[in-house]
Length: 258
Ligand SMILES: [Zn+2]
Image: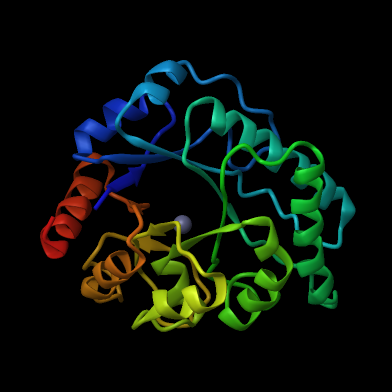
């Protein structure tokens, strides 16, 4: 069982050792910005490392929106980050499902996802798996509720899209965690990565505030069960710095018995 943490992009391998992590996730550029990532100074070490590397795409990316001043640059930035992530040997690029605006037809949002994968294929294909992550909030989200996830997969499944399941987002988004991986797999056929987070907020609150495992509203055993059922690596995106994340990783290892 590979368990890691979301860490600062500076010296991710040092951060992994400090946390007892065998996987790391980080941003290659400001998550709120549109900048092309600069080459990572530790690229060679990251590529050679035993530590699994995952890259999270910027939050500004929304390939689903009908607003083409956001959608077109989002598409391009997604592929740019995919290429930069592949340069450092990353195993996947995580990107949020995005949303359409109120009043817009969500069917177009799903089709915009299809067009995004078609665009990447035309440009030579993404050089690593693109893992679409479920999100917590909003009434017009592409990947909050699983009825929409099924519509998304009708659009992107044929391109080999991957899936990242965030336990905080699922709980706050209104999806029960009991047997959640089976439900996701019946739609997507795969779960590539678990974001193992507790939630400060209640079920279906629509709020996205991560908490340390056992400190929030989620039974940690449901998180462990999701990791086990997925058979996928897990990343904690939890507060508390080195200490908080090391404790979360230790808790997962202990309860999962590995
Ligand atoms: Zn997440």
